[in-house]
Image 1 (tube, rainbow, N blue to C red):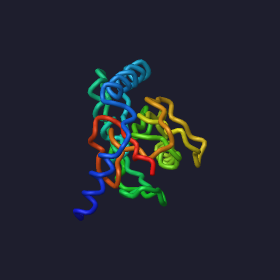
Image 2: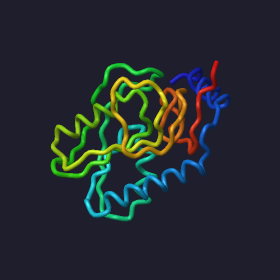
Image 3: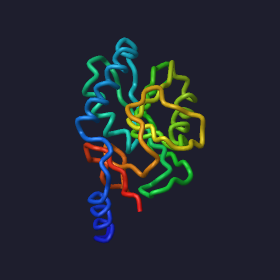
Image 4: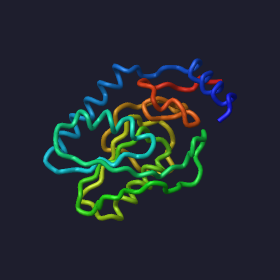
Length: 184
């Protein structure tokens, strides 16, 4: 880790456009939790957090769900802290058996759709009772797949986003608002 990179990520944050503030994000997560509660309160679901991006939303979401559930993680990644995606790589996989369970994949963003499609395929191969996906952001961009999420918090423009689980070169996932890198 170089001081040059730290200076860069600080500069990107300083020049970024805030698209959604913290109160907006909190209200959106409340609404997502209400939808999930209606659909899953009696089903003993597994919330499957996409590592790393889905952990921020997953933690915020599960504290709002007052019914029995379990959590797991799945890491399929294309970015590896870079700004553009490469080949889909499998990292961490669930330990808990998924067969026969209702699964809700929780991720930060749906953009090109490759990662989410890979996660759905991974889960489907385990023969669950059902698989649905929940994303905080649906980026309005051209998709490489025909996938969509069943639960969507917000639509965002086709810009490079960070905050609320989304990162800029591995940083700023911790921010409670969503920012877009300034247009050059």
